[in-house]
Figure (spheres, rainbow, N blue to C red):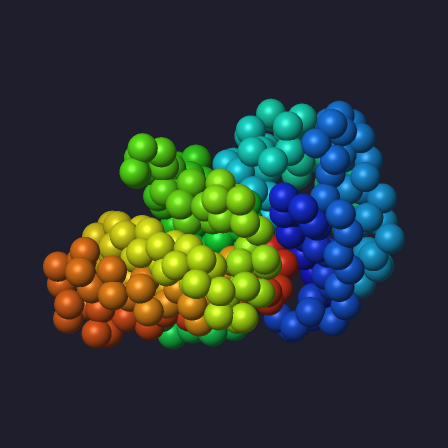
Length: 274
């Protein structure tokens, strides 16, 4: 049995996994922005202690930032201000006497999503749409993370006076005075402003996916995160824009786009880290 942990901007998921299936799970609030490093680590250990069992053989944890997967040192976590350089692997191994693996959360997501949705895909790219825009890349089932666990961070590419992440995450809606759930509810009710907003979001997503295609030529793309719940409204403009922006239509004919908005892929993927 393994313990998988997914640290997000607003929540932390902890799940016990047996044979690639989550057998139990709890979700707790993430760290307060004002918390010190010591407070965040103690809080995390308290939550681990509340769910871990003697049968757990290892702990896998996904965090939303750059990670050195060999040393398990976390660098500059965007949504955890006190996490500048944290030896998370060593800290948790000293505390729980279990092997610990630490990875970027989008990399954990794609490992889990690949196992769940497209295990035979040759090149799989995950795009997670949450507080920011995360990416994960698998070649022939093996994670490609780059030298510093930062490969594929296309969300940081310059775009439209900012970066793609400003237009392909919750930030897009918040900057327009909307919440993602609020926009979804309004769209379901047929609100023209919400529908226009989500259509524009889809166009930005299409341009983002064109870069993904040029960079990695995947046969599968998995779109996850809370904003992926809006895909019935943004899928059409996204795919139309992708067709207009990307030159090689035959590659798009062989592309499969999956949506996994609210699943436990990142938690499952964290549990599969070795």
